[in-house]
Picture 1: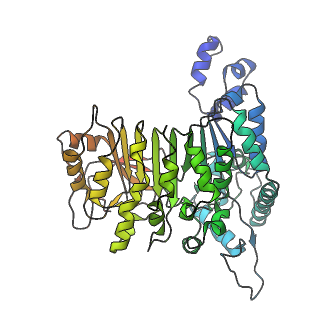
Picture 2: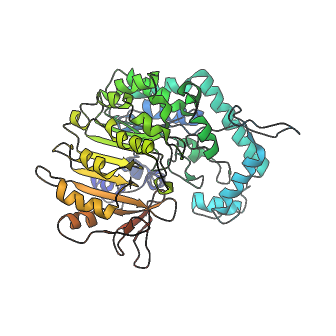
Picture 3: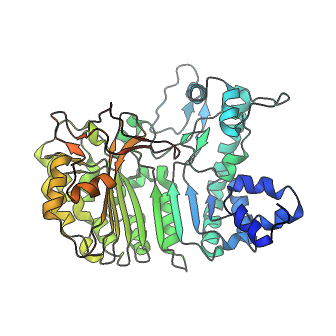
Amino acid sequence: MLILPAELLCAITSHLSNRDIKNVRLTNKRLRSSSILRFDRAFLSPSYKNIEVLRAIAAHPEFGNQVKELVYDDARFVKYTIWRDGEVLHELEDERRPMNEFLSKCEENLNQVGGDVAGLVRARTGADPKPDEVLMEFDDNVALYQQLYEEQQEIIGQGLDIIALRDALLAFPALKKVTLTSEAHQLGIHAPRYPTPLIRSFPPSFNYPAPWPWCGRFDDFNAISLKPWVEAKNCWRGFSLVLKELAHCERRIPAFTIDVNWNHTGIAHQFLVGRPPELVNLEKVCENLERLDLAINIGRNDTFNGFRHLASGPLRRALSKAIRLRRFSLHTSAHAREIKAFGDTMADDFVNSLRCIPLEIWPNLSHLTLSHFLVLSENLLGFLCQLPPGITSLTFVDIKVLDMQWSEILEQFKTRLHYEGKKPHITIAQWQEAASRKVWMRSEVARFLDGGDNPFVISPSGNEIRRGFGTVRDDFDESFEEPWGLDKRMHM
């Protein structure tokens, strides 16, 4: 391999993962110079490790020029403690968590990887623990976790991550996108969605509760969703500070995305009430955007108050500033499959919620995604009839049409939607029995619109996908993919 020209070596190593490139670079000087690490994405959170690595990348004359995306991880560690006898836990007023919860979540982690710490090491590293490797005990896990929590609180108290974010927005000349997420540690600590420098630095046997503040426990968010934004906003600190820094940044960043990976979470709907600083900053940020992915937690599953706030007008005013927009995605936390009945007032909220999207102001829009919406058929069809002529793709993820099944909706697509020029690609994804899996259909929809079979059939129990149509994919495991089985059916 060493006799190959340098240009060919670079071309070969460019197809390797960063982990493999690091191993190749350790071989000799020639392979080191021909194997260039890729730093197209950088991470930030209230963590000394993440801040240190971010600043090192920014200072590097080569790596800093590669960064195109900055990811702010808003998943924060919490304080665990042992309750005194007779002490009452007021969870909504007290951010502490009981230590027995720490233990139970660690046990859940082990159950996912075979039941023991050795399985956790194998899941993280791909190999058995070394014979002389000392595996962490429960007390070791608690001590390291509490250290991480204390460092996090120190950074937040001093605003060090805010300073690092402000510097990073100007330090990377190729930066095109800022992503905000609380999903870094999900699906679990053995397979993080975003392997940040902090997460990669953990000992292979470190077992801890994966933080997930935007989702939290269901009962907690039901109560939080009733509070005004000023009282609830601390749970979404990253959202507030990222919007503020983007709004006041001297350069234009064309893409801002909130990544919840289709989960039933997002930014609390209360920020759409009144005119809080976050909404003002969103308006300013929208003026520069070509891509915007929003995720809104619409609140309690029995009232969905957030749909009312979507329809109330403030979000539409903010989105109307995004006259350059080409890609837009709007996700809500609605559990569409759990809707059993709804009254006229709720139906009105669902109908009006699509009005927050000002299609008439986005002539350049080419990609539109709607996720976890509840709609009435006529309003969905009327909305889609307003799409600009340059639309190239439409994606519908777990959309619940309250008065019509998807088989009928597709028939309406065929007769009522007309496009200038080429038809857009339409993708429909429906939840499957496994919580993180969906059946995705794109070519099947295209064939139907061109005269083929409808991928849906009418069913008394709801939407049913025709056997042999669609591909099952997992939200967390990108390698998982299988045809929607001939012996399986899916209902929604």
